Image 1 (cartoon, one colour):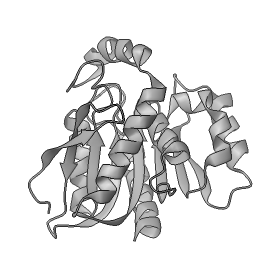
Image 2: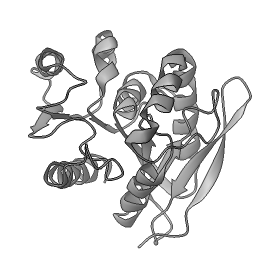
Image 3: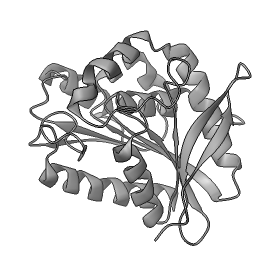
Image 4: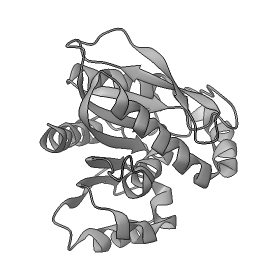
Length: 238
């Protein structure tokens, strides 16, 4: 069960403000989880992820990462890919890093957050969750755990592994047309000597967790990955 969801207003580093969807457990508080969007924006799928996390006892916050380009941009399924890809190509990852830190600070300061904070995200959001884990710091402290799902842009920031110091679980599909096998192997090699980082693979393609994209969704892989995600967050966030 969850309390009624709402939108929070987050102040960006440059003084602007942006929306973030928030779902809170029925108990009224819990460990925090930042949820980072796919290219489709904060849509039914991402709101549903937040609601499911709240149902598991977490306070979930999904910041609108496209707010500088098109606030509240939202598309439902594969038909929205051209619009979403056009926004990704214009996304300023430097500004996004600042917005991620602002969302992290906002969640950490909410009365409904009991202190620890994790990050997860899907596709574009997988890379943003990785960016969060490696760059976002509040009072010198980063997130307590990260779970990036099939983040294709992670391979554009491999240098960030030097600052990855929280437990991290990476999810990938073995048949992902957007993430070559060698890119997954690169990540596996970089975490091989890290006892707190794991790569899990599934017999699925890209966006296998997105139930709003029928041609991509793989129920078996999504269910398995979600179970691992919940176990990982519980173990590292309390």
